[in-house]
Length: 330
Length: 235
Image (cartoon, rainbow over all chains, first blue to last red; front, side, top):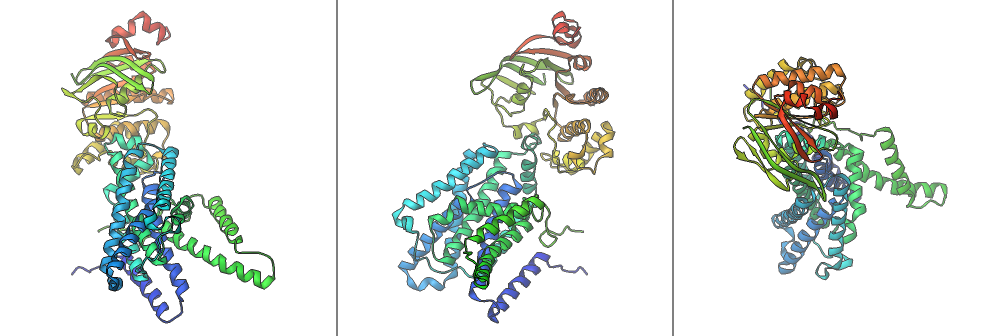
């Protein structure tokens, strides 16, 4: 008789979900911590999807939050319109999921439009184009009155919750690892390793680069939508260059090309950034020293410098945790 | 004719790297393009395998016009290009490098067979099968790059400066292996600065000078041509 083996990742995810949910129900975790966990999970989606573009395919993109912005504004606008038409809809998750997907598809479409001409560029040049694209998106949102202009899009219903964000992150990780371990993923890796050689063994490098870019943009759009419906706001400054760099830092700190690394770094850095806020305030109170919350960024940056000095390849390097890998059939 | 290049012209922006290049490669032969630095040898190969766009002229491969076709579409047609400076996948093992070369082949058994052939021609590569590509010596990387082209298969092998940066004893070995590959039925277009060695193994030769094909003939004729002897063979 063959034994049915549940995938390790599924088990690990269910256990993680059950523990967090139980702790929250037992009021060990307060809403604040749960909010940070939600944010971390959204950053997991952002980091892992950028990792497909930067880490696996080796295309340096600096405009990832621009795609998240497209997703946030599109899904946010849709849900607010629907809410105005029918105020009783707030409990209908199906509609929210459809709006999220619409945001993702819009971001993927923009990703495709940007990717097609600009992926002929390499390295620094591509970085500059994507940087410019991110800023264009931000400026466009800043200047459309219908979505609030510089005030941001207000009154977005709070649809995102831990369960939904968790499911989104879970699906993303499963899809990403399936892509990475498929022949398509191998083709993308070969482009990172040597694009000319990839071309010469017959891999359609342009197609795979656009594919990575489009898939990455899709998930960034989903993450943007989840974020907008979590904090009930979509604001142009959330999707600027600095935010894109934050996601970039996560994948470099976690290890370029490692999804495990992206997940650990997304959690670690989000919690670190919040933890330092509390820690420094406590320290200031205890010692009566005039240190304000802004010192948090100094310490955060120093920690990043130390990671880069002592673990240049990031926390995980290019390794993948056994839990995430697809188990090879015997 | 396996490959017919007619009045080919390729420019990088305003600079014309090759202005008027014409030559032919007959089935089953070794043809060499020799010339100094900047004569346009590498550009010619890159244009044939679809890595550069042609501004004018035509390239015909196996009776089919392939001018300006994309690189990844030319591989399954049978053009295997070993680029200058080797360009292997450094973080993959030797075996994985060869397996990846079978990308366009759907038949796994065929990939295995061709890998065995590669190991036969390059015993050194077989010894290093489980080593990372980046840890090989220059000569071994060159052999791996050629081996990869053999797994990809195809009808013609485009070799760009296979002797570059190699110790003299390895240069001899590589040229010997090129002859061996040719004997197994592969047509070879060889670009070389090491004119003496190239003319030694080739059937036909063309001399490239600043973007033009100037002298052509059998390798023997070219080797005895006084202009070639003075300029390229240092006699």
